Image 1 (cartoon, rainbow, N blue to C red):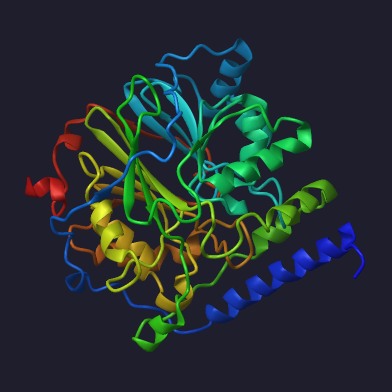
Image 2 (image 1 turned 180 degrees about the horizontal axis):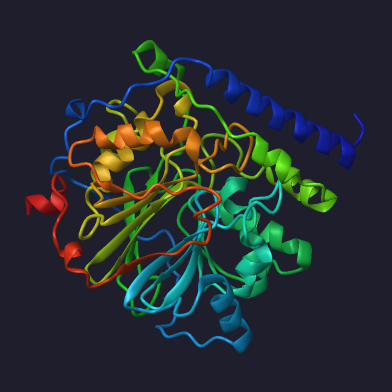
Length: 420
């Protein structure tokens, strides 16, 4: 068989994408799931969390704050993020689409995932990948390597030198992205694991910065649809996706379209070989948990017991959880999986994400999920406060938390910290 041409590859990727969207659309036409019965899943009891040594043995912590930046970088930060973006007295978050955030903590500025929303539509997000470069993040944390989380990590790291935190495969893909500009050797990687090591449900504690407490990194599992869930009474999630926004912001840039389809193969599938990682940060009395996927962790599922335990075993527990509410599990178990992450983490405040209009049907738009998600959270025991992000209104709208606010000292009822 002869070598495939670029146009053949393009058409093939397009067919796969359209097929995936149609499958999800058909699944969404089923019956809706009811809110999870919190009584059937009691708060996590005391358990033996599985802690493992850091996968990387050669990582050197980054310098302490404050970090000197050029006048050009400071001007970009002021323009995009507002003045005082790295005030160490506050933790700040700026949503930049899907599960990606610009974050500031302890005087450090960094990225959680890296992808400009561009593919079938363009310019829906009020910043581009070049803006992520302009603000010069110190480091880039990747939750998993799918395109909608990591397609711009190499672009940003290659131009800024920011290290990438993620699995071995994810780092290799980042170097491939950066190679387009000859920047494949311009950054380092803090490797968290390979396809098999460490096992899901384990936590590594890593000193990322010299002046900050260790970051706890949990290996968990990516979202997945399991037909067996339907046989046990679970139901698909029904929603009406936003479509008009894609037509109003149609992408007609050939180069962007080509890059989008090229990125679809990055760690494709429900078990990305670079792993799925959740990150827990602590500064003063404040703690933040961020994860960009929510896998099947119902009782009886593989690794479920260990992941449930880990979610309630982070140092000082979880004050603010920033987590996805969209996943493939919605096809066969509704909101069950994403709800279980909230239930077992016991946050005081929850910021759902990944529900914006980033891809037709798969990215439904905030209004498609809001009523059902609010009902789901309200049904949980010790339900957290909900800060429901809306697109595009909340893009780049800062969320700030005072580190020394007295409320962070009080453990959330139901959490392991409240039992101490």
